[in-house]
Image (cartoon, rainbow, N blue to C red; front, side, top):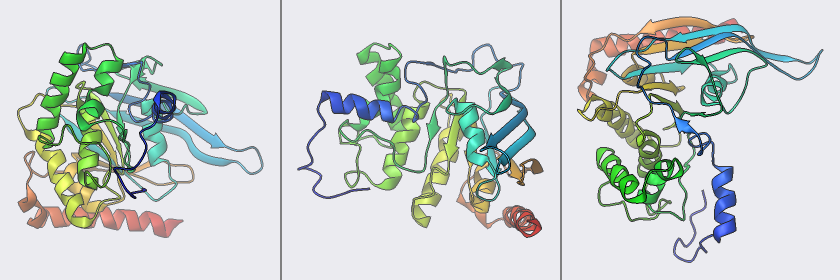
Length: 306
């Protein structure tokens, strides 16, 4: 990330801004698409991946990532959930998120969202490790953008965006440029999360969202993620998180799926039996330590097999 003189950097012209917007469409999938919301979907699975095959390259040098892979995530009505996906690098964790978001199609197999084949008109927000805000726009304009692109009247979009800015703890920063170092790394990720949640989607995807942050800020962001879903603010999406951190997965998740590879399958499914309401005291509990060690042992066992 370039820092330099933040005040002397030239603001992109209209054409350059549009090109930058198009290059970053994947931040919230296709901006002209309708976000998936929860209405009418309570009785079916949130996600079904059926008989997924993913092959790169041609014989004899094919790389088979998935071969008959299946994943089912059930809905939890009126209650958000975190599903963490773990596994060694290259096993297909991020590829799963890309299938769900629509950024990638498998070689073969079905991707079902609430029991229906994924359509181009479905938009599922995704938060990445790298900062994805539009630097020439304010925090408020960044958060309001998905609503504006989907036809919400400007004043209503900005009002809704301001509500989300308050929820994510950025009140007072709404008129600042969404760029580093005006905002810290943790604040920029809050902007991305607020933008992803502003339309109240039923599914949120997170691909190592805190991986670039220092240890203290990373723990603060984990606590922040728990707090916004535990608060009485009507946010209850199914959040699917890819992470390499055992402690992060245990602290955030209700379920942890550990993949093996070559080709990938779900080797372990660990239910996290910690309290639904979690604060930092949970990290000091015996059960938290036991779960972190269990996840680490299973990850290391898979590594030793290959």
